[in-house]
Image 1 (cartoon, rainbow, N blue to C red):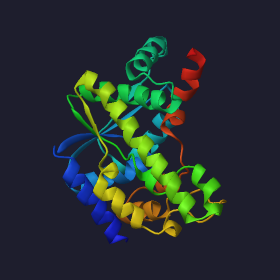
Image 2: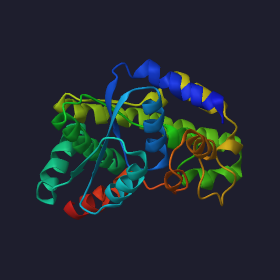
Image 3: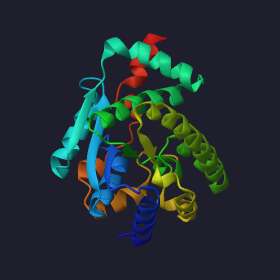
Image 4: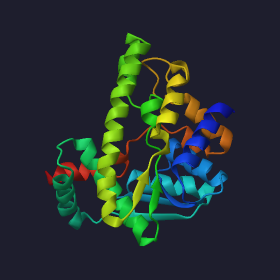
Length: 248
């Protein structure tokens, strides 16, 4: 087991998640499943929250993964009739045409709504792993240009993610819910940047990526169907991207 990686994730959680009764934005993917398993092992009172349109990938896959974990799990199916107005209101509130920002803010609107219905006011996410461990396809495109190109892209991705999560918290505040991202803390970012690129991505043909994260997930008991699953972004797994394009 990569004990140093595990310890740094644990430390990041302890420093940024003060309450013991928390929710986790859960898709069943390796990132959210790893963080929920570590939080549970740290004796946090964990409730998993999954949102999406009916029969969406994230709802089906989250159910499949949690059948093995058996943690408390709640699902909110998005109402298609109200979706257009909600997405329009969010667009006006965050005042950006960045599609990814809008999609993520919409997703966390529903996560926050679900959390509030369960009297939970803190949601922990695994945001930061894809940025820091080369989870995006864009890393495959830049790795032939060397580590400096990878690091430059990483800095761009991190800057965008940190700013986007501020917009997400603006939306979640409507429900008096705080979204926490321990793996975007400065201490963890600095540690993760010290992890060799070869433990994150191998080459331009590397479809899996995030190898250090996947190995740690295996070691701490994340179900195999989760840590061997290729990335599917939140907006696609929930079908929010597909539905949002139809409303424009």
